[in-house]
Every structure is written in structure tokens, then in C-alpha cells.
Image 1 (tube, helix red, strand yellow):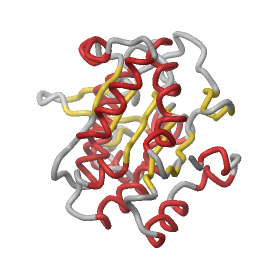
Image 2 (tube, one colour):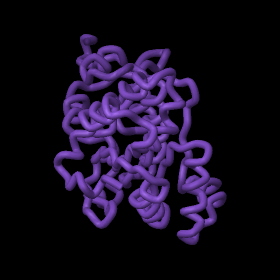
Image 3 (cartoon, one colour):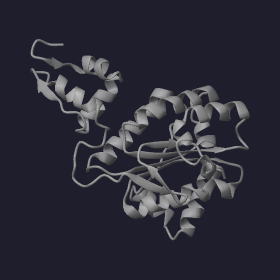
Image 4 (cartoon, one colour):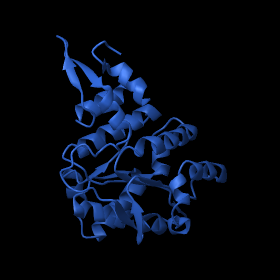
Length: 247
């Protein structure tokens, strides 16, 4: 730490136990206060701000409006910062929770994200259209963002989410609604093992943001060993009514 009591980017990253890229993003988005020093305008961070940030979930930096504490998922009140893994065994079952969840967010102006490709994405397009929405328009207006990172690494995927969420939160606190169709996301990684490592890392990262995430698992696509590890990566499942997430 410098003699003036300020941390540089590397030291701040070590203090918060995150990457330097995360520190820079949070600083750019105004979520983590920083100072610019010297001719090169390098970032510096006060220890008091870092300590405060440790105890404050990302997304609360601008109290422009009250933060929503829960959202409705399948008739149940689910707290913000929840990360669950609904399991389904039919196309209709795969849409039962997620389509109303996304539609409610789109109507409420809450940033909504969908990780899906191919026929799965087409099912969502049809289902949201049946909800009275113009699917192309909600995409063009950025009320719904379709997410993908073909061939990415775990670090790439987490950085992608942080970038998207930081931009969404720039206008003040809101709820981030996320649906990840994991049969689609599996194809975005080099292997199924990478996908599971990503899920475990996402569980830690997402708790810093006001997000509710439904990681959808098609039981027709994954074996029992994978599903066991999936449940371990989603501890919130055991604090809620697990049966409501089996479709």
C-alpha cells in the first residue's frame, strides 16, 4: 500500500480477493469509489471504501429508488440474490417457470437476460410472443438480452456477466433477471467440466449483484453425476421449496 494510505488496482484486487479486471470494471461503473493520481491518472482506492464494499452487495451504490427484495417465481416469493437450478424433463416444463419470470421483468423494465441458442431460443421466442410480446422488439430495445460466448473460458463468462450487469446497474438499483439454459451454455464452453466449474464460480460472483438466476437443466441432456454436482453448486435450492423447481 502506498504511503498516502491508498491501494493501487493490484492491491485492491488482493484485498477484495477478486481479479484486477473486476476492480477496474467496478470502478468504471461507479460501484467502487476510486481516485485518480499522477500524470498517468492511475486508480487508487481508499481502505475505508474497500471495507465498505466488502459488506455491501454490488448494485447498491446509487440509492435512487428502493431495491426490490424479492420476485415471483412460479407463485413463490424468491429473494433477490438467489441462484437456483430448476430441472425439467419436457419442453413445456422447461418454460413453466422461466417465461412468466422473464415476461414480468420485461414488463417491469427490469434488465432481463437469457442464455439460450438454437431450438431452445426459438421456444422462448414463441412463448414470449404468446405472452403478447414482440420478441424482436424486446431484443432491439435491450429489455431482454440474449447472451452467449462461444468457446469462452470460465473467466470470460464471468467477465461477460459483470460487464452486462454493471452497465444495467449504472442507472441505479434494480433487479437483474437471468435465465440460463444449461444445455445451450454447455456448448459455449470447452467441456462439461468447464461448465460445472463456471456454475460454481458464478454462485460466488452473483451474490454481489441484485440478481435472481434460474439455471435451467434439461434432465434429458445431463446424467445423474452431473445433476448431483449441479445441486451442490446451487445451495439456495435447499432453502426454498425444492419441489417447485422440478418440472
